[in-house]
Amino acid sequence: MNLFERTHIGNMEVKNHFIRSATYEGKATEDGYPTDVVKSIYRELAKGGVGTIITSYTYITDYEQPAKYQLGIYNDSFIEAYRDLAETVHAYNAKIVMQIVHGSSLSQGYEEKAKILGPSPVKNPVSGITPKEMTKEDIQTVIQAFANAAGRVKAAGFDGVQIHCAHGYLLSQFISPLFNHRTDEYGGSVPNRFRIVLEVYEAIRRKVGKDYPIWIKINSSDETPQGLTVEEFLEMGCLLAKAGIDAIEISGNQWIKYKANERLYYKTAAIKLSKLVDTPVILTGGIRTLSDMKQVCESSKVNLFGFSRPLLKDPAFIQTLAETDNRFLP
Image (tube, rainbow, N blue to C red):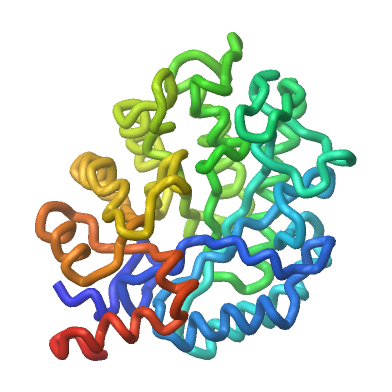
């Protein structure tokens, strides 16, 4: 398989199999608007040959912000602000997908003024923050916030939207038994813990229409005892595929602990899921060489690869990959 050839991710045609996975820049304005620096970062990535860019995580409400100088999409004034960014990426024949997120107790850029919600009032071991347990009204409000944000993403000319359900933020807390101790229909069993994620997807689908690409980034496990297991994740992946999600990017809750020389962190979970669903599966984490990717392609249906650290180091990393083997020159 030539990973530099055009392919489809669901109904989105892309110029190659390489994806810039969402990477926090911290270069937005204090209230979340994209700056010239942000535009320059995405321009260089598009020029460097990556087929699809997923933006850094973008917050969807005005009452909480997981990090300072983080991109936002919490009201309609952002639509015009992002149009130029999308057009800049499109000028280099690349696609752009916005990742949208609701934070929780893992981190808050402005904790003192944030409304911090969670599935249960469980103290976060990383931040020490205990969130307010969400009422059912809170849950419906958050679901609608995701849908409204996705509508803005589409209106701004982006090629798709990605739901962030990983790395300790709100939706990943709902799917984790470490943080979700609820006894109602949003807690307990795998389908119950996953209910809010499917409701977010369905609300977005109603907002953007049946053909607009909706992706998700999701933990394949909590990578810790008593947490979300790979087996539970696989059940959730099948529920997503049945619902009609357009692509599933695989991650894990301890991704930050992996060292730069470690390889293919979530290969096993991605391959297992690819054998259960027809939905495109994106493997991200610890991918450095064409041989890494060849190994995965030869043993599974996984042929889409996401990168963060390599593109931080070299925005033209994809071109560098091509030059390592003349057979893959564009």
